[in-house]
Image (cartoon, rainbow, N blue to C red; front, side):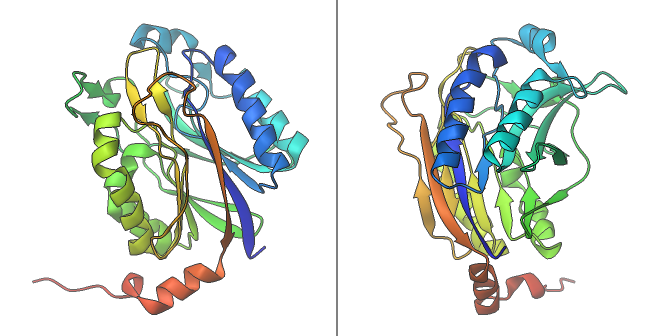
Length: 281
């Protein structure tokens, strides 16, 4: 396939998967009904816990996740590729939590997974300290995925600030790079649009960035403004987001765009920066 219709979902995840999944499954069904071949969900797709303690209590085992079973069934039911932006799961080998992106095929099988490499340890001026490295084990491998003949590069949220990862994904063959996120409101309003457009321009890839939006159970506020960006850096679709309303669910949206892979080659032929590398002494 040389083209696809992609959907990016924007919503405010609840504190538990049990509360989030009914709304999420309905949104997936509506995106599929609008012709999406690839449906993408944000980071923390199934829940954002109210506290570290509750996160430890409700995180599912990587090989025994009811949330994933339901999402796999949804992908198979609708015959779509479903990118679960990330879920919080516990590894069997060392019992560590990981922030994991999963691609599910139209047959409901898991086709690829990626563990977030860059941990969000930051202070963005919203009165909170973010220390993901205190909660999660970081991944160590970049990951390409394949869906309907197209090559996807996988990333998650804070990865966006590390352009070397995106260049490596593009050089390895990525045509679409996904950036599921739960970007904080303060950093989002300053950096979200410019960083996503920059990664698209630098790589000559489509960028698909489904995002959380609203105030969550732990008090954090996420930015929203889910985007789909062309390889030339043009915004093809942006979720309707009312920055004056941070209520949970107030900015739920589904955006879609038709992606033609010929645009990737055109952008890279026009500005061949991927194949040019300066030598410094």
